[in-house]
Image (cartoon, rainbow, N blue to C red):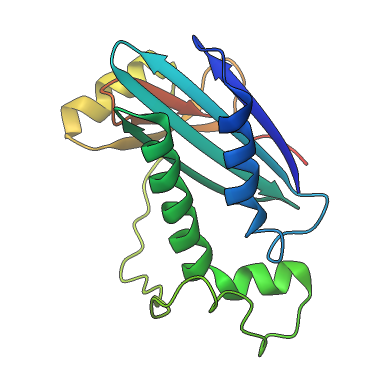
Length: 175
């Protein structure tokens, strides 16, 4: 796995970079050599945020945590990634073309598999509007996300409320 470590508003020490590489090394058995991990560390006031995104053949695993110490945040993020990987084990095995009976993750995570149960399908008209109008519509409905057709691009986009209270925009990207 290729690892890129980025520091925002902070100069990262080499011992932290080594720690990141050591902690992510346990995922080497799961991901191919062409997988890319991007570790972003951001320091704002007394909060330190660590975000890890791992991409492999169109699949994305991402986790983020904020703590007083970046090592603590790193521990939480690696644990969260492990849980995600455990939940999505069968999808990862298919993506890797590994024998589905092989228990590649049980050495690290002993949580039971979580069954995905879609209980409802909702259909609605996707209206043309600006992202700002979509945010207003989302807030009026009291939802955490809202799908709309972007008036500039004509593509279906999604606006969502982020944990920090700001808003995000999801835009589709071709492979």
